[in-house]
Amino acid sequence: MQKLVLASNNAGKVREFQALLAPLDFQVIPQGELGIPSAEEPHFTFIENALAKARHASAASGLPALADDSGICAHALNGQPGVLSARYAGVSSDDSDNNQKLIQELRDKTDRGAHYVCALVFVANQNDPEPIVVQTQWYGEIIDQAQGANGFGYDPHFFLPDQKLTAAQLDPAVKNLISHRGQALRELIKQLQARAQFQSQ
Image 1 (cartoon, rainbow, N blue to C red):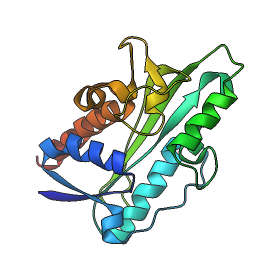
Image 2 (tube, rainbow, N blue to C red):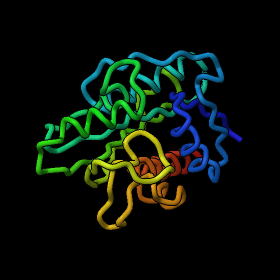
Image 3 (cartoon, rainbow, N blue to C red):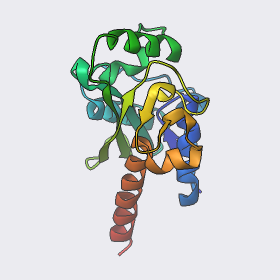
């Protein structure tokens, strides 16, 4: 089983990645278990932040690293909270604080459309010149009243019209199939498999 350091200490993300990568025989180790502090995220794009986090985790661990930078973009707010999703209501804010701020910002908006973004980056080592980079979106709309106990982040307020459920009401297996993170990881896995097949020839 190949060890892979995950550049995140978010318990929800760790659970999702462990479930999604288990069939590929990866042992996913959260960076916190290795004493690796979180990387700085100074960039304005999801991809740049994910790449910085992956290189940081790989440099500190000496292992291949996987990082994602994800968040939600409200269409009526010009893409906010965007890369600030995890700290939208302040540096020490939690999911409830962030959700309440988003709802407050949208209170007089007729357009409630939003999409989750996931930028996923894999590096074989800290200086990998060919990181695998994937970015995907998951579209829905923001509702005022939280619904559902699964998921994390903005999931209880992220309503999916085609499912008639919020992301937090989905069965975890269904969420992993259709979410921004599930889509990104499946594409990443395809590219990892293609690279491994080429390198073995």
